[in-house]
Image (cartoon, rainbow, N blue to C red):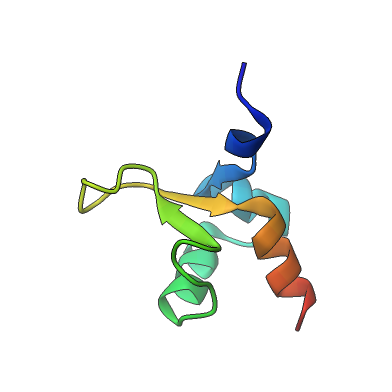
Length: 67
């Protein structure tokens, strides 16, 4: 069973579905600096240069609602 803190971090596909965005749109927002690394997103494996991105569900939702 996953802890509550690990459930807050979800993959790009899940985050895009939750936001009703295409995953590429989410990645473009990330590249444009809309989200902060370590706060809104992080690498699943920090040692791998091409690691998958994990998103903090609540922080991303709050960031989008702030606009």
